[in-house]
Structures are given as C-alpha cells and as structure tokens.
Length: 153
Image 1 (tube, rainbow, N blue to C red):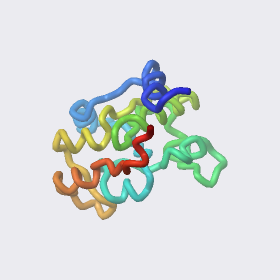
Image 2 (cartoon, helix red, strand yellow):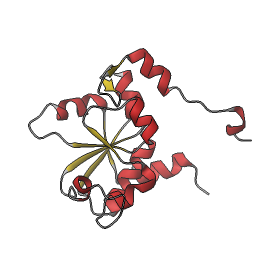
Image 3 (cartoon, one colour):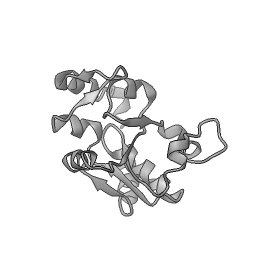
Image 4 (cartoon, rainbow, N blue to C red):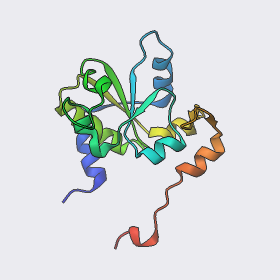
C-alpha cells in the first residue's frame, strides 16, 4: 500500500511544478494561464488566488468533460491551454494535474507549495467577496488542524 506522499511522488514523475514567484510572473503576461483551484468550496471562499476557478477534486473528471452536471465549459475546452492547478500544499494539485494529463490536457502544471506557499511568499489572496485577505489571517486559516487520533499508530 502506498502513502499519500508516495502517490504524489509517483505523479510528479510526469507532472511539472511551478513556484509561486514564477506563477506571479506568468500572471503578469499578455496570455496568463488558467488557474484551477481544486480545494473544497468552503476553503476557496475563505481565500484563493485572484482569477482562479474552483473545481473540487472530487468532481474534477466530470468538470473536465462535456455532458455532466459538473461540466465547467471553460475547463473542458482548455485542453490545449496552460493550466495551473492549485491546492493548499501542492499535493492534491499534483494528483489533479496527473489526472488531467490522463484526460488529454497538454500543458497542466501544479503550484508547488499551493496557496500556503503563495501566502508565505507574501503574494495576495482574496476571499469570495474579492477582498484581499491579510497575510496573518491567511496564515491562521492555512494552519493544519490534524487531531491526535488522525496521527496514526
């Protein structure tokens, strides 16, 4: 049985990553990449990178294809566009980017360190009301909440 970290490492053999400061530069170009945040809607509403669309990882496959209630047309039509997949830490985004590669996406990258690293680099995050979230408030939101019983044997 593989651990999550082992599964992510396996996906990263084919998935390229981008660092926050490099993504920041790409966003300032004439043709910025599509930002895809695969966190849960409640997480996305609290804070996200400006311009991101939210498609939870649990419905990603259907969102990427036509004919489903979950279809996101701009995503389903973007198989040849550059897409940056975002999560909290960079693990779920690597798994999601790998899935998207299997679905035929040609230029999909994972944001290494996720929104946590974006915030650590002091780049702006906004809430669902498009208000900038204070860096310290974002730090508090992004702290893991692992309970003792979740630590395992």
